[in-house]
Image 1: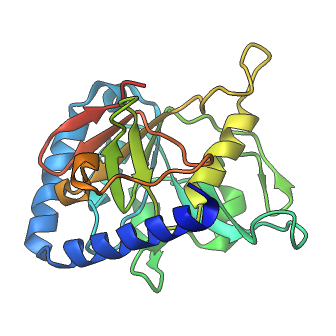
Image 2: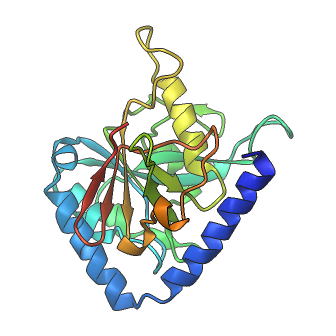
Length: 245
């Protein structure tokens, strides 16, 4: 599939999912979010993780992560959340904006976050340099890298590759997570790893059950060379789909 066909296929599926998810009631989303949280809280990789990155959810259309953030902080985990900022790269040499992961100090810090125009709690840029970062460079300033044990990702739709068994993800189209994971993999390489190794962090998505599509029904996730497969998927009906790649 060439790049234009891939882009068109992703756009079609995003449009289809937007229509499908718009029919879900707020109560249904909260119910699935609670079920997904209960499953996650008993999930061994989460229980053992000392550093967890969690997306901060927008209202509706996805698993709500407020219970996850509160539980992780209360359990003494170090919690990181996404932060979008200007890349500082010259025009044509990379994306204009980048996503990095920065730490939350405590529950009071989390509760103080202001919502952006999409209703997502967001880090105040003025506080970024007081926080730990998953990658040591941000806006030209250096800090020590903080390694992550588990990243919980959002997405628009997911499936299982019928050939490899890998969990595939369709994002919102900005490429923030894929590019972050690429940069994180490069930053955490050691002399014993090969250039083809995946990021040294577990990647799990949280999804409403309606976001899991089936390739046999003609709704396969279109993937390109930069689309990162996941280690697994935790669904709003309590199921855990593990990648067998």
